Amino acid sequence: MNPIVICTHASQKKAIQANLIRNQLSLLTTQTPLSTIATKLDVVLLKIPKSLQEFRLYLQHIVHNSTEDLVVICAFMTRHFSSKFLTISQEYFEDVEQSKALKKARLLTLKKKKATPIVEPIISIPYKSTTYKQYWGVFSADHIDYATQYFLHHVDVNASDQCVLDIGSGNGIIANEIYKQNPNVEMHLMDNSFLAIASSKLNIQGETIHHHWYDNLSIFEDQQFDLIVSNPPFHNDYEIDIQTTLNLFKECRRCLKVSGSLQLVANKHLNYKTHLERTFAVVETVSENQKFIIYKCSVS
Ligand SMILES: C[S@@+](CC[C@H](N)C(=O)[O-])C[C@H]1O[C@@H](n2cnc3c(N)ncnc32)[C@H](O)[C@@H]1O
Image 1: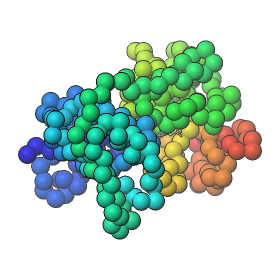
Image 2 (image 1 turned 90 degrees about the horizontal axis):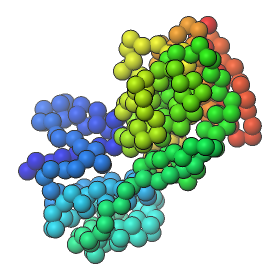
Image 3 (image 1 turned 135 degrees about the horizontal axis):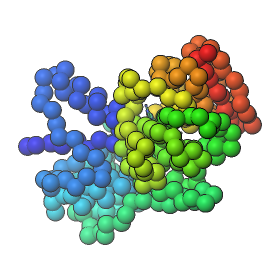
């Protein structure tokens, strides 16, 4: 048997490889949910993701890269159950069977795959004069996120900014809107999600544009930026989790030029100011409304 792992998050891929090394197991072949898989799949184990569109994307990928005898065993926590799990599964499989709960978790077993057409797993989202494209399951599928739109009204880009980083770049909208204003910049986009990076590649390309599928700033060991922008993540699956973001803010300090700034938008209730003040010499509130707040931070 030659198992493969389909990874969507760079952090997942790193954790799996680290655990295999720690347990002296051989490294596994990793693929992405957009790769064509050379060896057809017989059995697939899948944790159902929070995004139903992402679930649909996985099922389409699995069905079109598998043998006729394919069996997919999906796991989920009972409290996250949605009848849409069943509806989507039934689009791709004749047999969809749900197990009883065990320790608050359940399985869905999917057998007898249906003959389904391959649909391009991409949606379009208009924003001003641009139409953004993104893969199923990427952040904010129905519209450009309202925090992002608010940020784009207030972000302060200087004509002299040469090197810009967008952290948690999603479909690339923030990077692209800045790039449109200032096409001479070297622009870096970084996101933990493979599907986000694959989406940003559809929306912003060029010799000075760099897309990074990664989850922290260690890849920028020797690089410093004039401007770092972000609409940072604050969820880990179903839970609110700001720790990853706070770690990213700390790393930003090292990666900012002395004259540079980190500008970010956040939901007000997250109260990032106290945390940012521990890391940056200056933390300004650029704008706020009932829901969102924009900070500008600098090291001097
Ligand atoms: C709030 S969304 C913003 C997306 C995009 N910038 C926008 O405005 O539409 C946050 C993004 O951060 C990404 N993300 C989560 N953890 C990350 C990490 N450790 N490093 C980089 N990106 C991360 C998510 O995949 C998601 O695309």
